[in-house]
Length: 477
Image 1 (cartoon, rainbow, N blue to C red):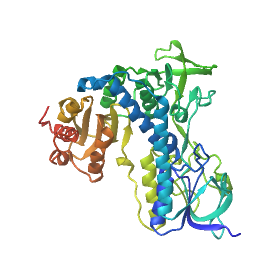
Image 2: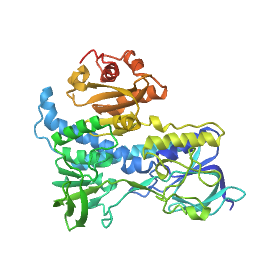
Image 3: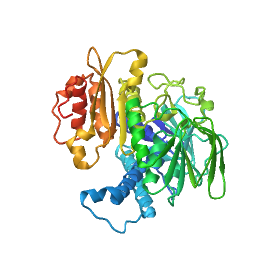
């Protein structure tokens, strides 16, 4: 039997991989996409970490837990009386799983629609390129070898474990286990106050857990604009998240039904805490195990990432890599943009990904979103800038929503007024940030946003007002 040959073979069907496969097919190539994720019945579950145990299920639980908290606290202010409020965690998890499956099935449909051949299994290099391309061995539910003239590696990342404390997903949890806790833990520990730690901590706090977050860095959300991070820290603390900074974890010991964490606090004093569950969210590592990179001679860097240039080219001709497995932010939408860009480069076009306008979002309540430079980055670079802020407290739509926490902040060049960064903490920040991304992509000035008509009443008016504030001429504050 002859080996199946494809113009493009994509290894991995996460956000980067499946989008790259679809775009390559749209451009007229014969495309195969290989992915090993499986659902509980053993069937294919494309979408990678994002769809299966990341972005999508976490947002489903964040939404459900926010509804629960509103029903227990905020509804009364709206004149809605709720009696006999009860949590059906099983149904909540079932709904989350249903949302995941809808996305899995949606990707399989898109493959069929775009004539992408899907293989369920693990893809690995079978050796160096031959006359027909690179041999790619598929193992698992599907076992066969195919060849690709061009190969795009999009194998994603894995959660990083603490040394000496591997994930068992029962007591010591990665994002996978954190999304599938079957009973609300009375005491929940979270190591790492990053995106995953704060989102998962928020979910379980709303559902009734006493949550303690231990962060090794001395500052809270160091990558976020300092003013925004301080505001967020104040609000999370008010909600009941116990956040300790500057912590040095000494040991994590799992017992039969609990986990003991010994650590030194910021002052160096020895502390010990016992939790029913422990979520560890201290970053992620590139997923190159099982790729057989050495068989093809694919180069990895000192941290295990696939080495690529600015165009996502590896050291091998016609082999590309995108997403979490290469340098740059580990964000689903960054992977998607690289996937599109690589497919277009293969077609001889000029695919482009602008790292300076990639938005970041933390889906807590309030949400945190930003794009571009922070104030501390501008100060460190010696860039002359102007800043403008506007609080949601002075926004009519936020008052009507009953959520007036947070602010919008603009940073603009002191001379040209070009927008250098926009930072938001508050309601629907994840949606509001898109206007800033568009503006920055088109090199807009703060005055451009300030002079554009925004619907009233809307949260987006806070964006306009913050842009006005850059020139010290807000109208509603």
